[in-house]
Image (cartoon, rainbow, N blue to C red; front, side):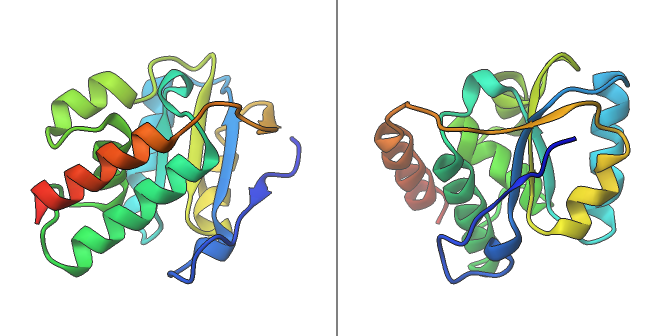
Length: 155
């Protein structure tokens, strides 16, 4: 397994330790999602996404920071920061729609976001070969604009 990326784009909790990898798992996607749910219960923020709906690392970090902001302002629509992130990545306020759009679909490939190293390592045993994200060339400004609108509508 290669070394995951580290980020420090903002002065918010744990962004210095955020880890984003594209991965695959020898286990089924259902088992991977169950492991993520369990890790989230233990205090970390861990989420898996369909790579087709992740435009950039910055998009995931923006979703994370927006999700945390919703919890701070008590305008969250879900019970976890991880699920709130999913709303922002999917650009919707409906969790079912978010899961359909941006949730991991198969164990062939998915994107993992963790807010701390310990959160990531709780899941790492489940992961097969992880590869470091190089660079996404996509322009994520449209996604950021829609996230801002979601934040306004959520508040």
